[in-house]
Amino acid sequence: MNIKCVCGSGLGSSLLLEMNVKSVLDKLKIQYDSVEHTNISSFSKNGVDYVVVGADVAPALDFPKERMIVLLNILSKDELETKIKEIIKK
Image 1 (cartoon, rainbow, N blue to C red):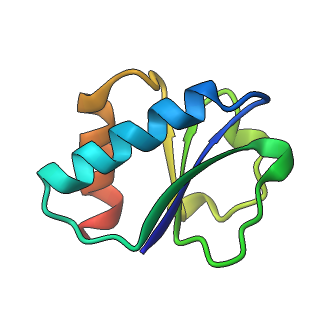
Image 2 (cartoon, rainbow, N blue to C red; image 1 turned 45 degrees about the vertical axis):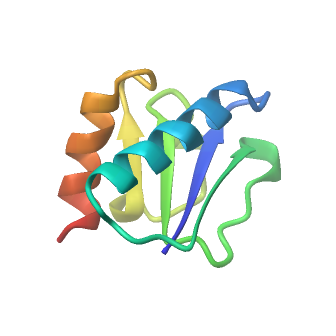
C-alpha cells in the first residue's frame, strides 16, 4: 500500500502528516509499502493507493474521493486513526 500526504504549498504540514500516518499505521499493525509527503503542485497519483490531506486542500486534488483521507484537523492523531480505520481496514 502506497500513501501520499499532500499539503498546499510547502512541505512542512505534509511531513507532519507523513510522520503521524506512519505512527498510526504501526499502532494499528497495518502493513504499508511507503508513506511519502509532497505538495499539491508536485503530486502525482500514479501508484498511489490513498491520499491523506487537509480539508482545505482536498477539493483541489485530482484523486478519487473514496480513497482520500480528508482531515479537518491535520494535527489530530485521533481523527487520523478513526479515518484510517474507516477507509483502509475495510
